[in-house]
Image (tube, rainbow, N blue to C red):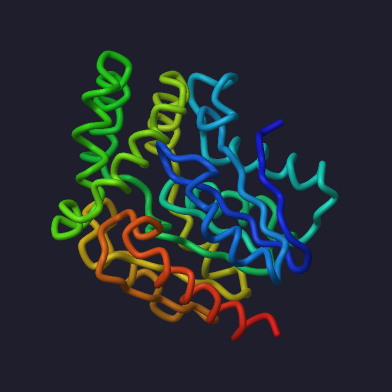
Length: 255
């Protein structure tokens, strides 16, 4: 079973981390929100303390099933599920497979849209490169996920993100890249969910095509979209702002 952190009591919020991250990225949010909610953060396959056993390809659907195993173990049958980047892809797959368990959905710097052909090719190349030279891969790729103006002042946060990446197994990293490139369009999952949804995007996020996502979200009911002055790593670039958005959204939708 996947490693998880479980803290607090009340309505359950599940946090899923992104590619090269682990459940530690949610510690700030978990400590704050657990005063009012039950907050569970999970290490996805190949990452963090779930890094030892992994498949050659970790599809989002398969990761979602393993997340559900954790919830079954904890006897939890209703959650607000949210995720950053890859974690958002897994959250969407979870909402598709276990819609009856989802009372809310959150996407942190993530998208319902699949990879285009160029991105798919980049994923395959990255899967090869990271196995050959992981240190160089982390050094070059992770800072680029931050907004350019934030890089000089957030060196400590960048080092933390690189440290998290080192806790992922190389096979797990490769498997995640291969799995992400195979994911399908899950816009209809959001349209059909019928529950409160939030999406946080970064103005300087080069990893997500925000304009295309926003266009796809037109007409979706119970949806709130927020934009911050960040890159792709808003949980590290603007944690207080992200937390405030989440707390406000929770108060508005779960009284």
